Image (cartoon, rainbow, N blue to C red):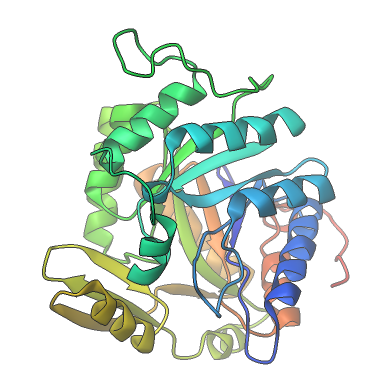
Length: 338
């Protein structure tokens, strides 16, 4: 196995549980991920949601760094459209100063919530005319301490300057995101669990490899592993990907049809909603390993970041354990009690 395996956890709040409990399960999973040999552990950003608890990845990352020892911890990702690039750079420089060499800065383009939460996050701020490309470019320069002469912010430093900079990743599910990552010379994560169109993945991977041959290409997948194929398929259930398409051309992926209707109504413009079967790789560890091997051979993937949409905690932990890099690397390891 020439690729690495990592985990994205969205701190899901399942029926009958609490957000506080979900965050504690995230901590436990990060600790298990470290034991099981995963390369990195990322947490997401969602706002005004009773289904996921992680609204502030920077705060959660600091706690996870303190409760683990060696695994890289990061954001999957910070929704940069809401924030000052300077403040994001400062936050991650503080984290990198506390845990040098262990911090990842994943940047996302999505709103991370409904239009009302976007309005709340940006309430009272001055629109300085920056679009996303300008924001992430400025953030990169602040991380690298290279804001050029002539820029309004020339000479600014995002302090403290850490002994090792956080690694920057662009998260996306389109060819345009791949193009931007290549242009900036940063790692690219294609969210296949959001956009399962194989043609888009092929185009994005080809463009990124062509424009940035030395870049790190990562695919994020929804994966459910079990001891038998039948059990894995039963755990998958009937999950859907729900997308809202606004008349202005924007689109967003949400977690349910009800959320899609709320998003469309809050947007204040005409919209359409589509549903499709969720793109989940379900099966035994050997089956999943072969699927990952095929993707790695097809696109030259350096790493896979997996998340597991299972509501039962024991089965969810078992899925990650069964896919442990220690196991998939064919090393002789003893089972870890969950």
